[in-house]
View 1 (tube, rainbow, N blue to C red):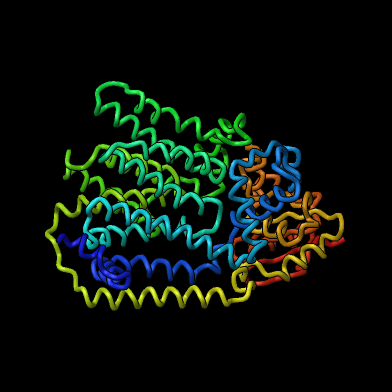
View 2: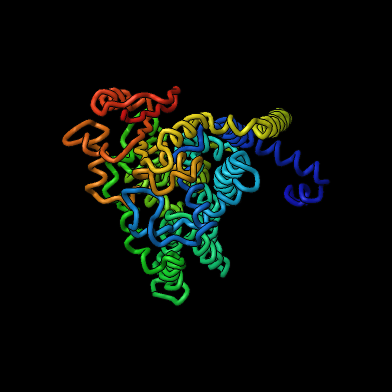
Length: 482
């Protein structure tokens, strides 16, 4: 009887113990990541999350938008809400269980993407120890982008599922890979990263054509069909322009750090390590590494350097494809079964306790960076008709907290709706350059971040003049005199 058969015939508790004994170190590392993510949820509801909630509420109340009515600067602009389904889902979760449930589901989605990539490597025969060694830099590269709650959270498990389908198809071609197409259709209405999923499926078709040395119907279908899926949306006719702006970064790269190219810093060192180390490993493996593994890694490596917000994808691909290559460089290791089991159970129990503890926290714990008193002070200072100029971290939070401010906030985080001149106007206002003070005309209230906008706050208080009506370590609210 083989070891797998023996394991399969054990009772459930016996099989679970065997899994923990064999994968103990990997369970510990992934469990520790999940614990850190859960305990940091109070910091993960920021600008993109508030924007998703505001948009989801608008869809629930008014249907799919076509033109903006939320802010002053973009009023009447065409609004292509490509991620409408994710926004509606996040809003539904908030209605069901508040931001607490919303953030816990986010943690589940993010962790499931990571665990899925580890399972891909294990299913392809990689040793648990090799998966663990790759997982350590992956976690560091993955966390900064993946930890933030936003529509992209839904994309991580979809990316892993698509990656599993295309990688499995290279080893054993079957019709199962076409299950990626409905996944892409769903993904199209959740987040713009669906383009990356389409690229993976197209790569699978391209590899099939190259290996067969002729364009078969199956290969052509995999090559072309994904690109029909990325337009399966209520906004189908307008998505080409939307994808072009989002993929290139539009005119807001200078304003949003996540859209800028990835440079070598302490925060991105793990990304560089993964890319350079992965290229070395794949190069050393040569033809022993499947062609699709190499292409998928190269694609996500290029995207990781193209923009900071793409760095999570290289982590997932590295975790799926590099461990089998590492196995070729190291001998088998005898796992300390009893120690693995004890430590695995300990980390899993700690995770359950962490989730229970965080679930017991009040809502104010999750929104501590956005004091409710600040939103009340803003609405009171603006009155029934006054307009509000809020720096980008706070605009959507104010719209969510005080719906009466709808149509009276200058702009929000949907930078793709802004023109180049408007983005330049924001940059000059924050830097107090050019004719920056003219931007303040027509606004009664200003909401700023005292940690980054202190000089701007002092300049507004002198020039307008304005007085402080609310102040906290996170937000300061100014009201014009007179």
